[in-house]
Image (tube, rainbow over all chains, first blue to last red):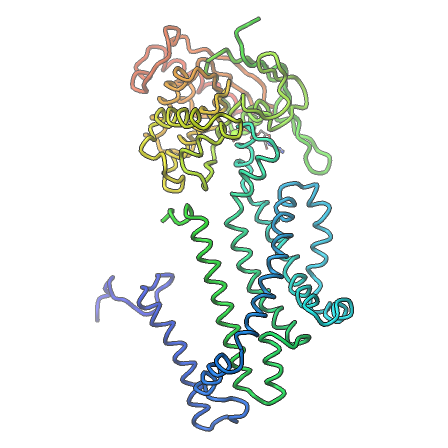
Length: 270
Length: 262
Ligand SMILES: Nc1ncnc2c1ncn2[C@@H]1O[C@H](COP(=O)(O)OP(=O)(O)OP(=O)(O)O)[C@@H](O)[C@H]1O
Ligand SMILES: [Mg+2]
C-alpha cells in the first residue's frame, strides 16, 4: 500500500486554483477540440457542406468579406448602433438609478414604473416601433435602448442602495450637505459597481442589436447574415456569428481595462 | 453658565416597531459633558448607548427631551460633532491624505491650510509613512486611525466614538486608548466614547455614565477619584494606581446587577 503523500497532485482538487499555464493550456485545448471536431466533420463529409462549411472555408470567407465586400462598413454600423443606444441608456440610467438608490422619495415614484417595464420583453415592441419610426435608425436604437435601460436603472439603484450607511453618516457628521453626500460619497462609492453593471448590460445590448438587424434592417452584421441566408451562404452566416462574438469579447475586455484604470485602489488589495 | 459643552435633558427615544408595537430604548437620560473632557458611556449590551450617541450626533431624532450643544439645540448632524463608527468608514477611493482632508475640503478650508492640518493629524495618529496609501493597503487598526484623524482634522467641538476599538486586537487597542488621551490633550476636544469594556472605560473616562438596560436610564455617574491629579497616560500605570481595582470591582458589580434583571 502506498501511503498518501500530501504533495501528490491530482487533476481534480476541490477549489484549488490552477496555475496560469494550466489555465492557458485548458483554454486552448477546448477550442482546438471544438475546431477539430468541426473540421473533421466537415472535411470528412459527415455533414452536408451546404449547411456546415468547414472552418477553413469560413475563415477564407471572413477574409474575403473584409477585403472585397466592405464588411467593415456593416460592422461599423452595428458598433455605432450599440454604442449610441448604450450611451443613451446609460446617460439616463446612471443618474436616475443613483437618485433612486439615494432618495426613497424618488424610488417611490419610479420603481413601480421601471419594474413593470422590465417584465415586458423588448422585442415585443418591434412592430409598433416600426410603425412609429419607419425603417431608419430610430426603431433599431429604440429597441436597444428599451432592451437595456430598465435593467440598468434597477442594477444601478440596487448597487447604490448597498452603499454602506456608515459612509453616508460619516459624511453627514463631517458637515456634508445633500449634494456633497451624493456627489462626493455615494457616487464614488458605487461607481465601480456601476461600471461592472454597464459591462454586463453592454453584452445584452449586443443581443438586441442582432435581433434588430435580423428583423428590420438592410445594414449591419445581422442584415448581412440574413442576406447570406437568402443565397444559402452558410459560410457568410458563420462569419457574421464569429465577428459578433469577437466584438462582444473586445468590448468586454475594454470595459475590464477601463475598470482597472478607473479604480486602481481596488487592485491594491491583494 | 456652567462649563459644559453638551447637555442632555431627559432625552428619550421610542422606536416604532412592526404591528404598532413600540420599544423605549432610551428613557429620560440626562448628563453633561464638560469642556475638553472625556465621558464614557458604559452599560450592558442593548441598553441604548449607540442610540444616545446617534441622537447626540443628530443621526437620530429624540422622541422626548432636548440636547443642546453650547447654546444651540441639536437638530441634525453637523461638523461640530464628529463621529467615529465601529465599522470601517474610510473612503476607499481616496488616499489617506485626501481622506483626512475630506471634511475640511467640503467645508471650504483653503488647500494650503488643509494640507498642513491633514499632515499634522496624520502624524498625531502615527501614519505619516502612509500619507499617499489607499485605505485598502492598511490594516484595520490603521484605518480606524485614519477615521479618527479625519474627524479630528475637521475641528469638531465634540468627538463621538461608538466602540471605536471593538474590532482591534488587544495590543493595538491599548495603543489607540493611549493615543486618545494624547489627542484629548493636544486637540482640546471633548469626547464621548461608547464601550462595554470596563478597563477601557476607567482608563479613558473623566466621567463614566453608566446606563441600565430596558429601558436605558442613567443608573449612576462615576468620576474616577484617583484621576483628580490628572489623567493617567499608560495602561501599566493605570493598573498600579490605588483605587483602580476597587473601581473596577464596583463597575463589575453594577454590570452583574444589570445582568440579573434580564
Ligand atoms: N432603528 C431601530 N429600530 C428599532 N429598534 C432599535 C433601533 N435601533 C436600536 N433599537 C433598539 O434599541 C435598543 C438599544 O439599542 P442600542 O444599539 O442603542 O444598544 P447598545 O447599548 O448600543 O448595544 P450594544 O452594546 O450591543 O451595541 C435595543 O433594544 C435595540 O434593539
Ligand atoms: Mg451599540
